[in-house]
Length: 205
Image (cartoon, rainbow, N blue to C red; front, side, top):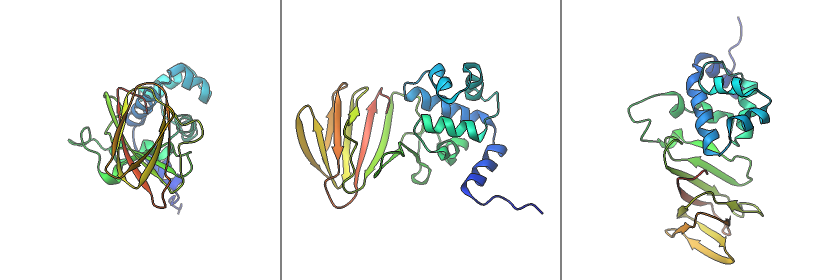
């Protein structure tokens, strides 16, 4: 008798086989657009034709794990992003509410920084993200390039915010708003985790 897969990869493979490609393709398209990446750019980066990628996004062609993994790497998310319960289960509240246990993670390559999508989808003009900085974690030497107006609310901990030559120390309960263009740099100078809720208006996170 064959043994059922018990690893994370096995579970992912099972979901890929059991579920139609349409919801996954829709998430690829939404995430690609939110990153400001064209269909042809993504196709070139993953070594697929534009036509084939278009079919994947529309749910016409089946998506292999190998292709999905390449797409996930290019779009800077975990492959599990595409298999979250909130993505594949359509419920009356799924377009409005994101339950705590169904948040999708992104930007996993940043050491000590975890980011979770609080918005139910990426198709509207408003995006919300919860960022958790481990003690000493930061956004990197180059900081972040803004692609639209954004703001934040410090839920817990401390945050050093550097922008336009200013270095500002924020405490839990503080909030801020940043102009649409330029760069900013963030760091957790404390000894406990820092959590920030970011709000992006008509922007790509």
